[in-house]
Length: 289
Image (cartoon, rainbow, N blue to C red):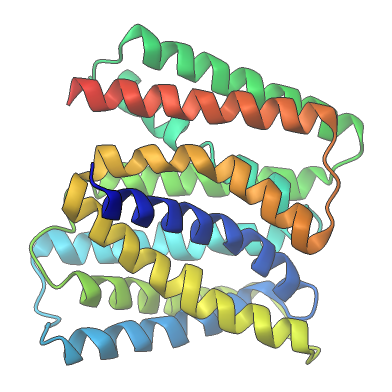
């Protein structure tokens, strides 16, 4: 893995993790589904525009269209939609920790249901991840965390895991920027319907809201996705996924610095254990590929 890939992986992990803090700021002043729908409209149009400027087309393969629709619904609408709703009552650091368990869940699912072999190091990583999550959840539940928000975060990471497994390898074949833009527009349409059905839109204009919304549209919403596709094309999905082990650390660090969210000893211990668990699982899967 060359230095450019390493720097891209670090940048992706930071941008992905920062989305939880910006989301927490947004939902303080705007209804979550409406705000997220608007974000995907802007990011999607920008993505499609950039793709057209690059000479790409929306004449995608069947596999690419399937990936676009699945990602648009499961990742953008369900995963991020539920996270935005949950972060009205759940801290950004906790949402980031739960979302960061996706590589563990994906590793477990491929082992149990898809027949992928997992070495003892990977099994140990899964056990460590479960133990780390248990430490954090036990402390948070005893401290009075909102259970509905916690449940929404749990469902959202299951949706993200399903999306990741259902479209493995389906985004290859070129036109990657067009795929990025179109799957965001699919998320926009899905979330617009959800907004009409489940939400009374509201917004309280403020500078933090404007800054967080602009940031989430351009950085986690568009740039992080482009970096991720570039990284996967350069070093492969399995090696690229190794950088997810940084997400628990970055997620709680950014929330702590920008939002002042407190971290207890159980949180720190759990994050460390989860981090090494994710690294163990991804390293084990890398060796088996």
